[in-house]
Amino acid sequence: MKLNFSIIIPVYNRPQEINELLQSLTKQTFHKSFEVVVVEDGSNLKADEIVKNYSEKLNIKYFFKENSGAGASRNYGMQKASGSYFIIFDSDCIIPPNYLVEVEKALSKNYTDAFGGADAAHKSFTTIQKAINYSMTSFFTTGGIRGSKKAVDKFQPRSFNLGISKKAFEKTAGFSKMKIGEDIDLTFRLWEHNFETQFIENAFVFHKRRSTFKQFFKQTFAFGNGRPLLNRKYPETAKLTYWFPSIFILGFIFSMLLLLFNIKTFAFFYGVYFMLLFIDSLLKNKNFNVAVFSIITTLIQFTGYGMGFLKGKLLTD
Image (cartoon, rainbow, N blue to C red; front, side, top):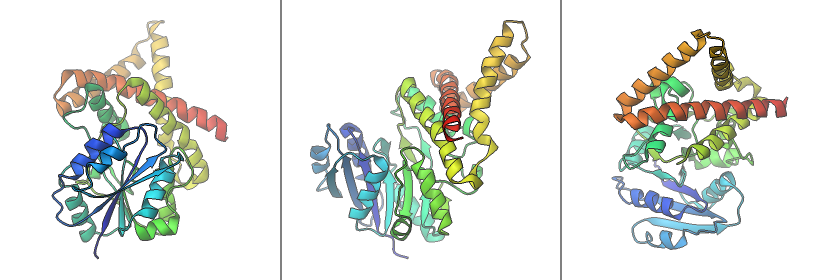
């Protein structure tokens, strides 16, 4: 099967970040032609001049539209694209040189109408960004589902690094109007239409995510807040594990209160867990500061997601 790739990039007020992304696309070792579609989602800080700089380096198209959110912008880009297989990136990603080669290799060997890949921390990322990446991909925090093929059963691609065939897009109509969890919602509808998904281990991207603790908290809160809505819409996908961050953070607060009464057992177990996080992050990142920050970002992650999940649960029940 001949694969004609169209890369879809929605962008909102992030001209500098998309410059880094486009620069990384010029370094692809993929020798076949591919298309790049940039969709400006009503930005005040436009990226049109930056995109123009790549008109001779990439087969690139630029569209400006009124603000309607990332999901609608991705759909708009896929409607304007000419390829047979769409690859969607967030504008804060940097793409490794062999990305498209790895995707074509994987799809040629085992074709599926949708795929997703992992995210990793680039050497240029800040200490906080590296710590956030660890918290979002570690086996000790998320079970490693975002960063390891071994941890993946039936993979749910995420929109920062997602591929979908034109056929599947037309059948599902792409992303829904959901503001949070729209990528997971798309995956469930793909499965309902009997489209297969897969995790391509070597098709990873360097994803900047958020650059401050406050931004990361808001992001994880939104993730947690959206999950009960997905559980209600697709009850067969609900899992007890979605309660874990809420239980974890409530247990942590409880263990701290017990210390006031000199009861240390629960706090001890949390201490062991945080020590494991520190050691694992230190071994993976080889940076003491990143390892320390990994404990902080994990607490933020569980607090944000846990609080968001409980709020969403109260609103949907």
